Length: 243
Image (cartoon, rainbow, N blue to C red; front, top):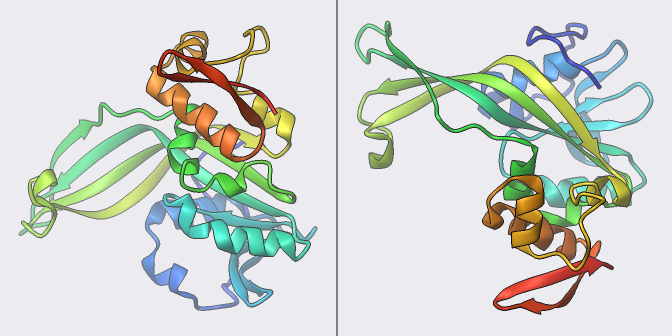
């Protein structure tokens, strides 16, 4: 699926359920709902006793989770087990602008680019605590690379790690790319075809051009999902092959 802008592409929909999601979500979440919505979709609809972000006219359920995939894993797997097709949309912030406001006037006092840039491999940072979603029957994970803006207020109520900054909102600026993963072959596509097994975090990291620690999480997640099996060790590093 392709997305070209941050403005809602779908119709203006009224929520069927005034769930907790509507009160706690940031603009990033609500903007993605508007972008993903299509004519005929139902917004915040109740399905099998659970409130779902979007219910497609073809029956597919769409859940948008900006962070904490482990929190949504039981809900998604329960809906899938009941025979529903579920799409979990997870944004990965590839570019972020931090806008800081004056605590007294609420005026913009500074703008800077965050050095942190996520990519599709960062999906496994979240999946490490939600491996049950990988290649689960009826479940599609759609990763969106996005450009976002984070609005902060330095009023002393935030954590000491953020020097007292409190995050007021997270806004969607633009969707840069999208990739979906459903089948076993799609998930195993994270391992380059030409890479000879067994694979270690070092060999996979070198092939993908990423740090071995990030590659280790990919191998760990795919193994926990039953797609890979351990095949001995290379020193202290575990080796993996297709299950």
